[in-house]
Amino acid sequence: MTVVLTVLKEGLLGGAGTILRIALFLIPIMVVVEIAHHYNLLGMLSGKIEGALGFLTLPLEAAFPLLVGAFFGIVYGSALIVDYAREGHLGKRDLLLIGIFLSISHSLVEDTLIFTAFGANPLVIIAIRFCLAVLLTRLAAYAIDLNSRRSDTKRSAKKKTPL
Image (cartoon, rainbow, N blue to C red; front, side, top):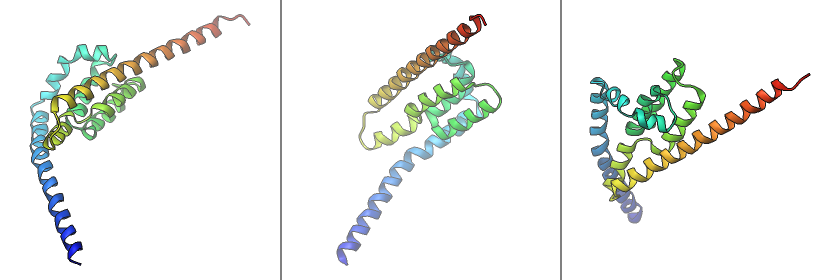
């Protein structure tokens, strides 16, 4: 019985310590997100990444949801993505590319701070995740566009054939 109590005690104390370390990073991040939202800081940043969006072949309307998802989490980003899609600002292709990008690089700030608390190198984490997200998103855009051109060519060939 003493062994069970010792294991429970160590498990609870270890778990509480881990939760406390994570909370020390998450609470300030949540405060910063709210401040950035209140002062429209992310909206101002959206216009500054127009070149990157062009490389990813995404419209400017994708900037704000992409930034929010990448820096503050996929939950925040997905809420904006759903709103933008309902309003008709983003097409299916754009939604797929944003999804690919965010599946790899969501929560860059939050996740990096959490892993840093456990001894990981933040620059390596950010660089690898961001580069991989850009590369795979661009490859997916190329594949989608190539497939779309092939489909358009087949459709136009069918229209040109005489009856």
